[in-house]
Length: 473
Image (cartoon, rainbow, N blue to C red):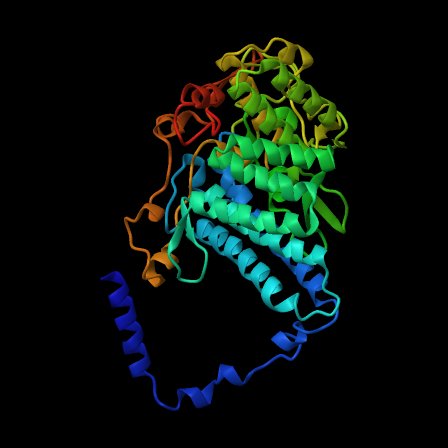
């Protein structure tokens, strides 16, 4: 009924216009020769240029998804910000413009990748197998992001919503095409992630091993342009805010914040969205699922060796005092003990601080040596996943939460109606029951002790039998 009323209103609007309106403004007569299809298709090196445009579009998509995913997770609390006002409480609405923009930016990657495969590439005399692989890779990324963040999304304009699992399977098909043409470690890892979230342990392990066999230190980044845009929105949220007290990490993650910080006037901090660390973590989880603790320990030892080689930035974060809005409410010095552990909080007022810009973790060789075939090992593993992937959008997915199709799609797409599964947020019951505690802490500044209200890693592991989390269990 809602769609009928909207269409009827549009008809009345058109009837109310005079027949001369088209003579007043005829938008179809305006054509910019620099923006026409022929200015791209058929031109030498057009595929290379188009691939660069896809890279830029990926940056736009990550700018939309990362803020939502990090706020929706327990990584950050939104204490005071101009960013999304709903996700911190997992208040997921079809009317949320940020969710709408995330959906649209993901879809745009797919549209551009398909156009590259079908039009730009085949008509470019300089087209190469490597560029064809890149277009397939980007198409796979679009499907991967759709499957990670949404319970269902259409794969074409006004199409039938495709389930998360189906989008992940489509991603695998595109990654297979990319690998068959020009194998790169990140192609294999992207496929491993898709298999991982589908719960296909055998194939996830095979793809993770294939990625590491090609390069055991690789990292693929989303690049941002400080001068011309797009800039890194997470950098703006975590570092560029200056004294504005907005996104605050859990005290257990304080030593990893801000992951992104200013580089120079030309280049903004990149997001390392496919990196070898993920392959080691997939392998470790698979080995724990099989009860093979020694193999999992070896995987995590390799992970630590890799993390030790990653960049650590020495930055001035003194403007971030942790207590601007409510003085004394958040840990802000290195002597603070968090959940009985030391060394997790940085003293930003004592001078420059060292913060990992790719991967960091509190995991130690002693932690690894003490692992056994029990749930405590899984809790440790998921704590490590949380640390390694902070500000990269994966924690939200690990929680089993899914976003909804936006209101515009409901109004315009005859295949979607309010109340459909794709319009209802997916929040596991064991997450919904602790939403108020996801970011909650208590802090005794005099005693120098901070405590999180819950340990979400323990919650996830205690619900490992659910098909919404811990895919290999």
